[in-house]
Length: 276
Image 1: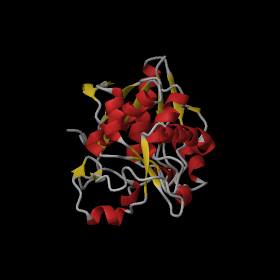
Image 2 (image 1 turned 90 degrees about the vertical axis):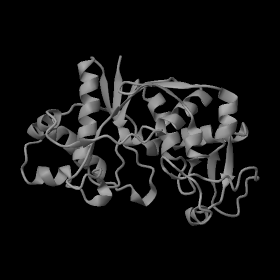
Image 3 (image 1 turned 135 degrees about the vertical axis):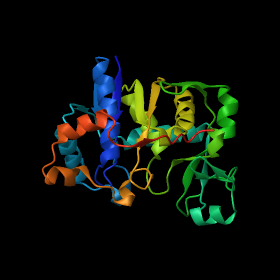
């Protein structure tokens, strides 16, 4: 059975881009006789706003979508911590005390998601006198695993190589897990078989595929869809104050009709493949 999911973070209201992503995941599941899940990704500290999950539910119902809700990330912290301890014990993680300012001062190479960490802390012992992040030793991980592949419905077979990002953070200084670790573990726990998300997250799958192999998790397929763009040809985003679905609801707009307009392709979509 196909299982998809929509996993918003409650750090702001949903906009048309979120609606598009939710509709794609919902429709793929329903067309194939599967399940569509809602998961709230709420481990972003003070940025996670307690009123937003209810707003999200109202938005999805307004669009005419039906879903099953699974436990929010904030209920899963022990599972993240347990896996992090295992990876640390296996020598696949190392502590890092570097700040973003310190990393940028070294003028690092740039990768698909910004500056590539230059490995300043690699080989250091764990210290507890200051906040530390835990980074994946990507060279060691790939040496242990060898060649890996993943399948995207729109882009075919891909060879997984997280080294294009350098050594990514799996445990943040201010949170028990990064997006990479939490989303990978949650998808496995929720039985997701088709990870549906925007093409701006395409390259992230290199990391997630490696984590699945390191942790002996089921391997889903992926469906990376185009992302909606605004009048300025930029990706719709909360930080750009893109018009929210909640505002549209409050003004009396018909959510089901909006969903049909999205399905008919009336809103511009751009291709943002963050890959080689």
